[in-house]
Structures are given as C-alpha cells and as structure tokens.
Length: 123
Image (cartoon, rainbow, N blue to C red; front, side, top):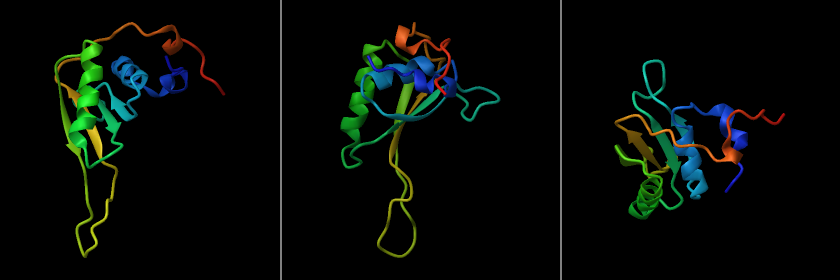
C-alpha cells in the first residue's frame, strides 16, 4: 500500500477514503470534494487524470473496477475534455479527466494505518 500521509491535510474527510482507495489502485486523482452547501461541488466528487484520452472507456473501466472492489455504489462517471475554439490547429486547453460524482454520500471505509489522518503532517 502506498503511503498517502502527504495528502491527508488537503482532503475533505467525507471523500478521503475514496481518494485513498483509488490511489492505492494506481489511479491518479487530482481534485476531490466531499460536497455540500459550502463546498465546490453539490455532491461528493473525485476527478481522475486520464493517461490516454484516445481510450477513455478503458480508463473509465479501471476506475469502475477499483470502485467496485472497494464496495462503492451510487455514483456516475463522465469523461471531460476541452479544446480551444478558434483558428486551426485546435489545441487542448485543459487536461482530459474523468469525474466521479456520488449521488449519495461516499461510504466512509476504515483507512489503513498508513492513511491515518490523525498523524502529524511532514514539514
């Protein structure tokens, strides 16, 4: 299991378990939010980097498989890409990514010892 203590101070507690689980499966997350009134997203959400935008279904399949193994349910996925509008050649203006949005609270699974959020953060 990867040591994920470096990111614990940056995560909302309501989504941290999902992020840890995905990262332990080798899935590169770059944004997350537990959702709710004062948060950036209305529902718990995790964004995942896409290694190969030409193969989004395979990338989404890896995310689904990891979530299934973790017992996560009640979510949907979308593949997001953006291109510059204007004169050719068209260029990517932002990374392609997969967004996982839970329509119910993400289950809080016990964190492994290396993912314990009560530890002090490195300087």
